[in-house]
Image (cartoon, rainbow, N blue to C red; front, side, top):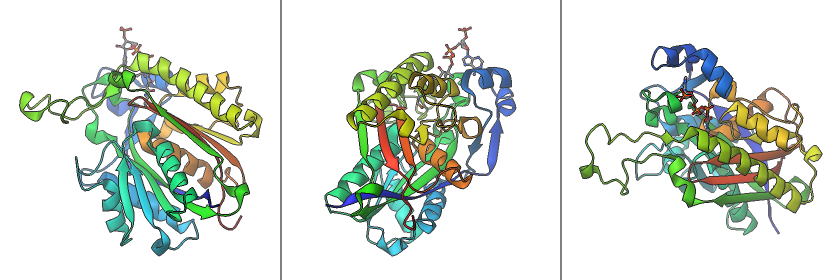
Length: 333
Ligand code: UT7
């Protein structure tokens, strides 16, 4: 039987930085409020002519280079995004494949908001274990600044742009394989976090120009409570069903939405501060890109080593959630 292994990680953030002080000039807020309530200090913002696929390509190039796998051997690309280059088609994954010069690959996007990367991981794992694919590029890429309402202080302080990517490939060595991915969704909470305009749920001709904008809206406080509960339960479930103690986890990588959420979940699970990966201060919430960007951070600062166990835990619009137990298994390990 083929198993699926995480071979490499890469990430990219655009150059421009938007600080809390910059936001305080745009809406009624302050560095003190944002820092205290979210832990965010700054976020990166893509240039006007920089697209989600451009961010994804930069992250993918790093992941490919670090994977020891030839670009030509990639047989599938999945992109998790809620800010695609184009509204309906082509998919951002196909644009990325063209920009990378990948030729004939299976390519598609998935929409699972901040849980997107964990969903792509579960799909990649299934395709590889079934024997249908061998080397899959998964990308989480977001230009959230394009769907953020910079008049709404409840959301605009949270989001940033960026991308992360990973190569998942087939192995016959069970020791280096992804142990488990658990995903779920509950549509009854859809109205907590959504972009209500622009789709067939709100036909364009029924909207005026202003309302037509495809901006994110969030019931922040309610979302916060559901997030803490869901993220905590999700981890308990995946550890228990795989008979793994939390102490065996070297790096706990939760979705980076708000430091208070990360702290509450980490404490509820008894994780030490050394285990919990936190990058929200410098990137804000980058939705589907947040988890691979955080893994890339610990890879680039040297704290992620071959063979170490990652525990991923995501939550987002839909509502969706997902967790994964993933050893880091570069090819020369
Ligand atoms: O990635 C997907 C999942 N997303 C999340 O998990 C995000 C979850 N939610 C959050 O992170 C937090 O709920 C927020 C950061 C969005 C808001 O923090 P909060 O502690 O839940 O604040 P709140 O919404 O309960 O608002 C408290 C007060 C309100 O004023 P009053 O009614 O008490 O006078 C808000 O109007 O803070 C006010 N407020 C602000 N003040 C300054 C809301 N946003 C701001 C702001 N600056 N940016």
